[in-house]
Length: 111
Length: 119
Figure (cartoon, each protein chain N blue to C red):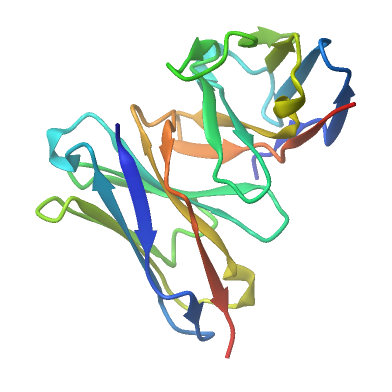
């Protein structure tokens, strides 16, 4: 069974920078996994932030960026705002089986 | 702007079939080019992809649920649906419908609907 792993929790200070990562049990994450990133606040539906590794949706704030880092997908928040406190999920696409797997989520605390 | 809205029973008895519908507004399913997904979230847990359907009717399901899942589309009503058979308490979750511009992405989400499996 394929497992996608994220940091369970991270803490960052307002105005700081933090990087969340997303790893696959099958090996290094490449652009061919088309990593997506989502933000979910309590009681709300997830909101899409990044698709295909680094592409932003029209509504994605500029302080969010996606990349590949050390064999993992990465989401970097620069100049963190208090409203960025949320759960963040990554999604990887396994093309061979045409299926999607979500990571377990990272709870980001802004403190 | 595309909007998605889930509807269906909030309570389903064990062993029965869970049925949900997603109504799409602000865009036509039949216009093509998009993948229409169902995703669920167990209480206090992470997201689980259930499956998706292309407007043509091609479907792809999570292998762990494949034997119990059917996703279908009704282009005349601009809706797509989820059926999950033989439900147990483990199927209690918030169910989301969503749209993706490709099989590898999700952009718009519905607000989600809680389905509880209990007698």
